[in-house]
Amino acid sequence: MIITIDGPAGSGKSTAARLLAERLGFEFLNTGAMYRAIAFRVLAQGIDPSDDERVVQCAESAAIRFEKGRLTLDGDDITDAIQSESVSLAASQVAVNPAVREVLVGLQRRAAEGKRMVSEGRDQGTVVFPGAEAKFFLTATAECRARRRQAELAQRGEEVEFESLLATIRERDERDVSRAVAPLVPADDAVEIDTSEITVAELVDQLATCVRDRL
Ligand code: C5P
Image (cartoon, rainbow, N blue to C red; front, side, top):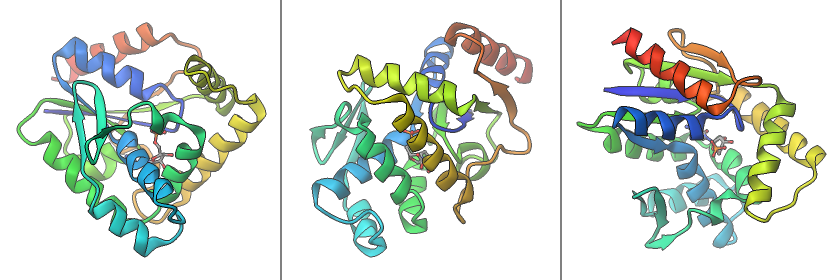
């Protein structure tokens, strides 16, 4: 059984997906972290994120593993390192590449085999798990999402100006929405929720109620 939660950066998907998975006793898959891992590897190897051929080679040879809430790349724990703004931007660049998406979609489907899973990203309900039992699409204003991102980065000791975060969020939104393969759009059968004015606890309650009603 699969539950998908898609939406733009800062819409609250990761936190909500993790908490919903905990509440239901499901596994949790953060697919944005996979694109970030490839971006991290690309940057570490000095590859230009728009160099399609080298980026694909980099994705094909990467060993990405999730274990106990941590992400490792080629055996190194990169959970915290992939949260930086430079990795965010590079992730949205490598995510435009169809061959990179193919590699990661394969990993995502394999990760879900035989499992009960809450999977979050941009294309989980539309492309990766079109037959998912429950689908959600979260939204929030760009300002609200930039504010959340600022608080998240501050907690990690990274101080970034609000205006610069807002500009990055808009740039990522634009790239995610307009790309040719697996653009960011709600699945026809997704429940859409605006998270701008609600707390995380309220959101998770709402998701859990919807899931119960649909099963
Ligand atoms: O969700 P997060 O902000 O960590 O994702 C980083 C980037 O990875 C996004 O800006 C998006 O371009 C890309 N992504 C994607 N498809 C997914 C998950 C993330 O294209 N399923």
